[in-house]
Image (cartoon, rainbow, N blue to C red; front, top):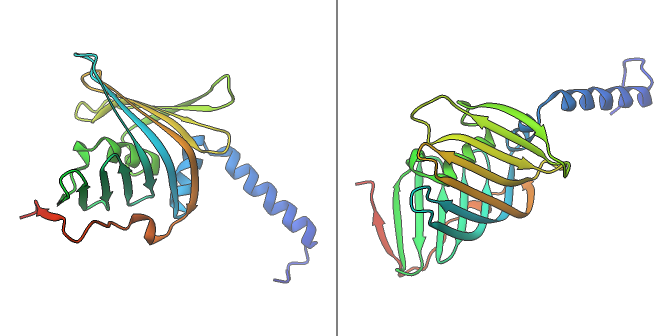
Length: 208
């Protein structure tokens, strides 16, 4: 498109680039990360999820693949697929060949709480940031809300704004660690959040 401002086009492009660069540099890492979700991108990654019980010192682990955008997330793991759209939760259990449909309760969902933090939907936390020796950024989020699922959360992000690790501490001092591998941001596509299951699966609708 031709510029009619009388400004040299090359200088105009340089000026816009500098302005964008300044705006980005003024943003915190967390704000830049959240802006990816605002721009309708989906974060797709393999994950490892660990829950350490502070009382028994027992650890529960799971692995799988994770999709998340501003409104939805999908998780596929060992014999299980979960799709949440903010209103409904749909879970397919391959071991029982069963689908459970229920109203979504975000406070009872580890992944849901973490996904809302990444997307910026949960703004009840205050954040600080620090540089790690490996060049990554550590985002620390804390809240003084006694009813919050997590009292503090740490998000490690690399130089390309890829989330690498989320460590959350709940009110009982349990530790929840989720690490991401081979993560990538992609333009949102409705097919990412499709929920499929065998036709002969038992359907259990908990909404009624």
